[in-house]
Amino acid sequence: MIYLDYAATTPLDPEIRAAMQEMLEVYGNPSSVHSYGRQARSLLEASRERLARALGCKPRELVLTSGGSESDALALYGVALARGRGHLVSTQVEHSAVLLALKNLERLGFEVTLLEPDRYGLIYPEQVAEAIRADTVLVSVMAVNNELGTLYPVREIAEICRAQGVLLHTDAVQALGTVPCRVETLEADLISLAAHKFYGPKGVGALYVRKGIELFPIVPGKQEQGHRGGTENLPAVYGMGLAAEKAVALVEEESQRLLALRGRLEAQVLALPGVELNGHPTLRSPKHLNVTVKGADGEGLLLNLDLMGVAASSGSACSSGSLEPSHVLLAIGRDKEEAKASVRFSLGRFTTPSEIDQAAQIFAEAIRRSRVYV
View 1 (cartoon, rainbow, N blue to C red):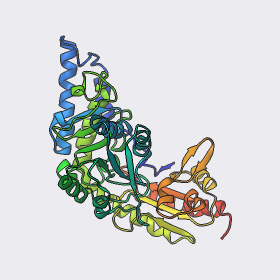
View 2: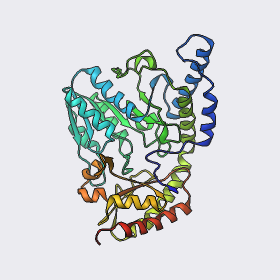
View 3: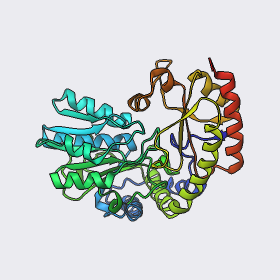
View 4: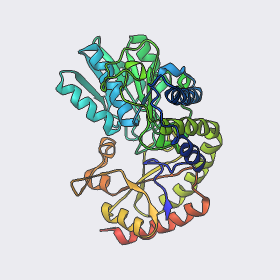
């Protein structure tokens, strides 16, 4: 089986798995004052420091969470509810974790503006500047689109927000280990991360919170400086710290390798009749390739790929047994049938050139089997 769905999740790095297994023997509660608790607390804080070094921030600016969705929710609810009222700006192409949180905030009386992307999925700083109002409390723009791989000008948007006295949150879940993702690079006030996207364990993530920002805790408790209650998952946090350290160390080399592999796949895939690229041709994460196959049955296309040995995904989410069109693809101008007939290939650390060539051949045959019309 050829795995080309790294944007959905990455395999746990074998070295990190082995290190995490040792941590399973450390069962003390990090909040306890006895020696077992102190041992756990020491290891937990060492892991937080490792993650902080990878990001270029202070350890106390990191809130440990259960993953990207919780980090997004804590950023959005935390800032909004701390302010009590106001206006938020985001985009139509954000991850559903952000969009659903914004819908809930609208129900609570907040106003939300969602910016419309261009046909590549891009959002421009000028759009953000025009959308900010006197009562805007937060702007949320992702760093890398999870479906298209489109890269967003987060730093330029941060400058606009800072000049207006508005906080900026960026969902950087798809960024770490693939593109530069340090705090001084992004300059956002809040940054969401998920370990399983950079070869760490599932069920753990972090939210960078710039010093001095007040957050309303959505899970009350005394842990994480009062930002997030609950006993910390030491083995997972330990794995996340190691994974972040390794991902950042390899980012330049890995980005170039993935760019070459994706170019190889893209050349073969786009040469097929009726196959069109989704996303920006150059301002794109090196691991992402999203295409629409004109005239193909989307569900059949994915099933054929799977049966023939390629694990990829659609830009669509499976809901109630039916394939729903991707909100991202609809936002960039695809109609419902085109959106359903789209495939996202995403490459990673263990992808090989031979797998790329095999996947391209299998994709051509899967299209032939799935095409409704030419």
